[in-house]
Image (cartoon, rainbow, N blue to C red; front, side):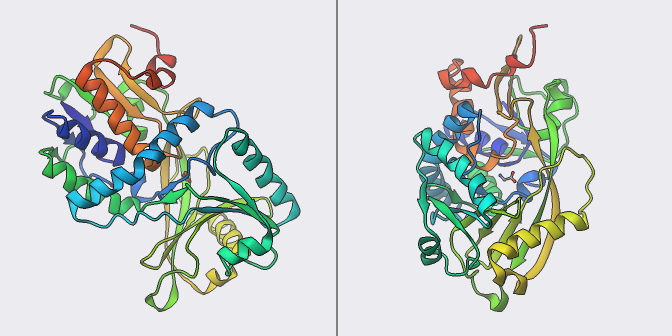
Length: 353
Ligand code: GLY
C-alpha cells in the first residue's frame, strides 16, 4: 500500500499499517515540511472542544486517551525525545468580558462531562506565578497536554523506517501514477486536488519565542487565553521555546503580517508580561486542512474502495494522529470501517460516480 503525505497523520498511519504486517511506501518530497512544522502541538480535547462539534470532540477524547501509550511506544522505538508534556492546560480570561467568554465555553465543556475545573485568580497564580496580576480567572484542563510536532515527525520517520516503511521523495499529483493497489491520501490541503474533496487551507500565523539565559520558560502549563477579545495560546517547551499562536484566517497567502504579530504578542504579554523579555526567533505561516463541517474526513472514497482518505483534521491534526492511524490501519487490515468512522466518511461530501 501507499501513503501520500508524510506529515504526522501519514507517518503514524504508515507506521501502524507496517506494524500490522503491511508493506508500506510513503510518498512525500520532504516529510514533515507541511503544517506540522508550524503547529504548536496542543493536545487539547477539552479546551479546544467547541459548540456543535460533539462528534469531533468524542474522536479527540479517544485520541487523547491513546496519546500516553502512543508517545511511550514512539519514544522507545525511535529513541528520540518528542517533547510530550503532561502538565495540563490553564484557560484564562484577562478582562471580565474575556472571562465570561471563557466561562461560556468551559461550561459547555463541563456539560459534555469533560474534565475542566474553574479556578480563582489566586489558585491560577499558585499554579503559574508569572500570570499577569490582572488576569480575572480561569480553569484547569488537567488532561490537555502538548507535544513538539517537529520532534514528533522526526520520531515517526524513524519508527516507520524501523517498522519497514519505505520512503519515495516525490510529489504525487495524480493517484493513478502510484503503483501500489491501495492508497491512503493523507496529503492535508493537497488532498483536494487529488480527490476532489472539499479540503481548504485555513491560514495560521504563529510565533516562536525563546526564554533568556538558555533555561526553560518561567511557566509550565499550556495557557489558552482570552485577552481583550483576542484569543491566544502559549505553549512552553522544556528546551526554552514558547510557541505563541495563532491566527485563523480564510486566506491562502503566505504573508506574515505586522498586525498578526502585534496582536499575538500583545495578547501573550498581557497574560504573561515576562514574555516581552524573550527572544522572538520565528514568525511562520501554516495552513490547516479545513472541511465544511470542521471534522476530519476518514475512510474510502465512495465507489473507490482502494483510495482511503485521512485528512481534514483542521486544528487538531497532532492530537488526532494516534486514533486516525489506528482506525485507518484497522480498516485496511479488515476491510470493515469501525463504527466511529461513520460520522467522518468522505461520502458526506460526495456522491457515488
Ligand atoms: N490547534 C491550534 C491551531 O490550530 O492553531
